[in-house]
Length: 167
Image 1: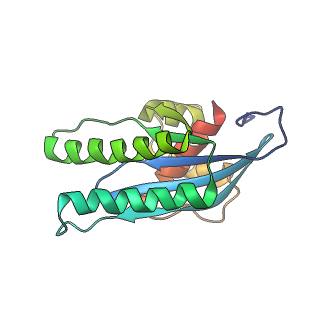
Image 2: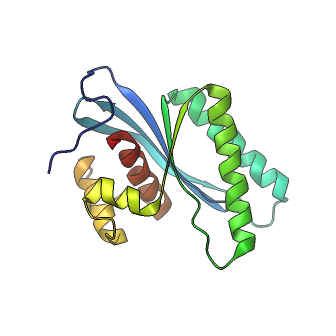
Image 3: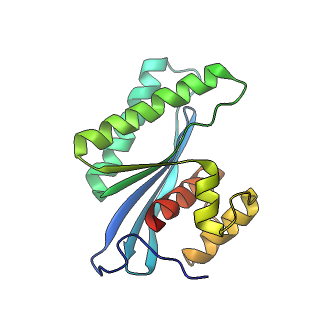
């Protein structure tokens, strides 16, 4: 399978920031894409303590996301759309954390692409109903990594960034 990366006609590297949104744990990944190649620059997880005040948790997310924008200067933000689960309280926190990320992207003038979970799976594996292991294996293969990024939130953010690059 051939993977067509963001701006395939250009050899100039494009920086994509992928976000797997969360309130307690937010995965992030930065990719450098040039032509048909994608390279993982960094990935990780922003974790906010459950014992901290709500506004301070959002502020921590904002500060760490702003640092990623300052350091890596992404040209595109790819973020997974909010998936509503049965826990509405968690959903509200995740929605607010997504809002923080979107506000920062807007302040930096960065293009935003929002993707549903099935769109991410389809882009990375070619199958919209792929399981988590299948997506992680393809992330590892496409990015030529020795191991799947950890924690899972970081691996998920890598998949979101790849999907954002493949559009």
